[in-house]
Length: 248
Picture 1 (cartoon, rainbow, N blue to C red):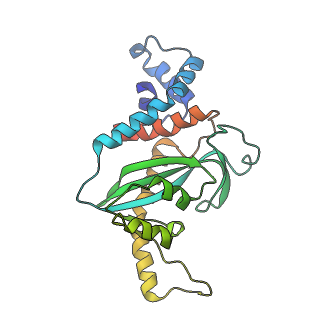
Picture 2 (picture 1 turned 120 degrees about the vertical axis):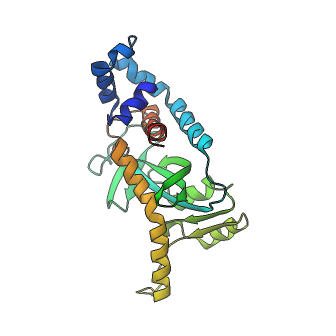
Picture 3 (picture 1 turned 30 degrees about the vertical axis):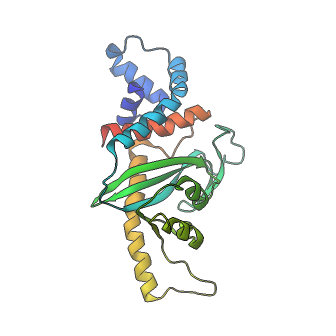
C-alpha cells in the first residue's frame, strides 16, 4: 500500500508505472518486492483496504463544526471512452455506459460523487464520497446517499433541483441551492434569477476546481488500464488516499 500511494504521489498513473519506478529507484528499500504480476494481484486484493484507509483519513481530519456550507457534484471516471464504450466489459459489476454533459461524451465507467465542505479560498474539505455506475442519475444517488445529513447548506448543479427532496431535507435543517431552471415556455431568466444563479455557480466553482486538481495530480478520470472491479476500487481510493496523505 505504501509503495502504491507513494508512486501515485510521484505522478505514476498506472500500477506498472508505480512498480517500475520503485524497482528502478527504490529497490534497496524493498528487498522483498515481488514480481509485477504478484504486485498487481496484491493491489487488487487490497482494494477494500484502500477504501477503508481513505474513509479513516477523512473521518480523522473531520470538518469544521462552525461552517454549514457544502458543495455537491460528481465526476466521470472513464474505463472506456465513447468509441469503446459499447463493447467494454471491464469491471462489469461496477461499470456501465453513461453520459458526461460537461465533456459532451458517452463513456463506460463510474461516477465519483463528492460532498465537500466549502472553505475560504481553498479547495473543499471532503466530507463523503460515493462511487456508482455511470448511468446512475445524480439526484437519485443523492437522495439515498445523503439520507442522514443534517444542518447543512448544499450548493449543487441544476440536476439536483427537486422541490420534494428539498422539502424532505428541510426537516433536517438542510437547504439545497441550485441555479434556477427555465420554466416551461420561459426563454430567459429574469435579472434576479440570473443574479441568484450566478451566485450559486460561483459557490460551486470550488468543487469543480477540486475535481480538476485530483485529475491533474493522479489521472483519476482515465481508468482505461483497469480490468477488474477490485482493480477499479483500488485505482480510485488509492488516488484519493494518496492526495489526502501527501497533499492534505
